[in-house]
Image (cartoon, rainbow, N blue to C red):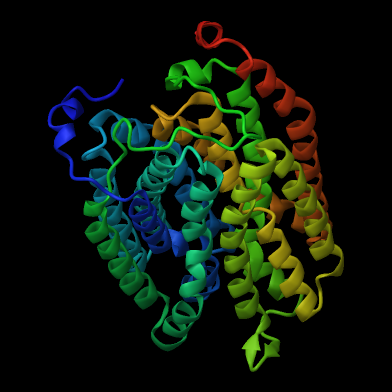
Length: 433
């Protein structure tokens, strides 16, 4: 399924340093981070400006996440098909242009349909960038896959921390439309420019050694072969459960702070609780990805999942039960983000370990669509909150979701992967078909 055209002239590619490739990917991820993690800053201003209900505005968020994920199998397949020389750079340039257009349309949106159109455009662009960067990382770093994917994903998780304060200042001084316009334009331009420095690895350019506790296949399986395995669908279900719990928090954190009556409380040198929480959350979300990715390189993917998601379940309970004071809100919300963001390093690493690097961009993109499915569970949090009169039950539900995934990782995924990857390569390929 590789591009026939990619073979021609591929040996003429100039040498590159794989750490440079990683840096370029991280920069691109930083540039699209606040498309998701900064969204919460715009919800209340749009509600005030147009009187749209929060539920209607959050449909745009769901559309963004859905399009950011559901089209990535096509985008990932194109990257793999075009080949090492141009696949990644063309897709990144396309994504940069589309994300800029999406946020500019956001700045002009005076109706909900126009807001939804902007979400579709920015979602497609962000997905193209995300899938390409993560796919490139798993290909270049088979020996440090968890760490490399974690650092790449950290750009997306922590990148918004760089713009929380500037966006709030622009919104306060010039309105939310100005923030949409200028941040969208600059971020899209940066992605478009650095895209031309990225490429995929050639045969022989990557190390062959792997961490001794990490089980990796020596074969590469096409998306069709992968989709025929129970390992993939188990990973998919686990991803949906963890992603949904985290998205409920990332999309609602400003509203939760407001309902807990701590959002505008000055907490540290005049900084409000919400602003400090967003800074801590974005940093924790980003730090979790390389941290747990590195840990998984040392002790194995499933063991790391059990540790991270077990702590996550406890964190949701703590915020729901004890998070109604300013410092408690900041600390417990930060713990949630610290124990959620690692899904974007653990699941891609596990997927490529299980199905090989050749079709990694496309294969990871299929798994990433689980995030799009989970986005449509975000409004369920509002339904539960309305039905129960508070956020406590929302956090009980999200905690249970995390504990379920812990059990699946240890008692289902781990033995299933061990059995499958313990088979001979021909037997595994035959069973996938």
